[in-house]
Length: 98
Image 1 (cartoon, rainbow, N blue to C red):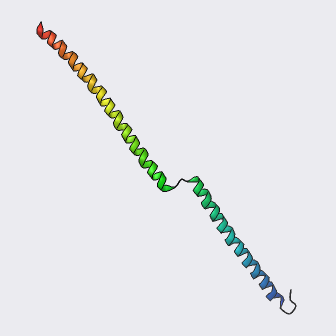
Image 2 (image 1 turned 30 degrees about the horizontal axis):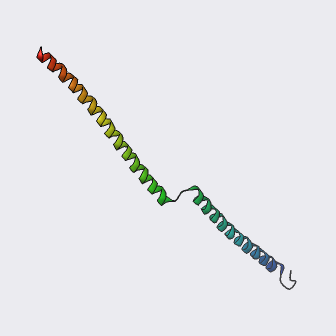
Image 3 (image 1 turned 135 degrees about the horizontal axis):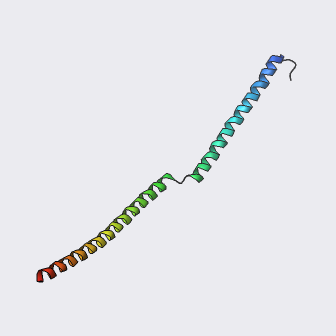
């Protein structure tokens, strides 16, 4: 400490230097935290564009699957119905012959 300067002035200087040092430290710490948070966020969350594409693809796939299923079901039910109709028409024709 300088003896030429008054004590209050010396104290103010030390306080300002301490404040500036802590401020710089806080700023650098905040930057580091921000950087780390970004890294973690990148690792945790998949990129948005890819997820949207995947969602679109999966919805297309599911709709295709549903269409296939409904088509299969429709063919099965129509086959069953036609078989039933054929059976009933056979019965009717037999009755008509009597």
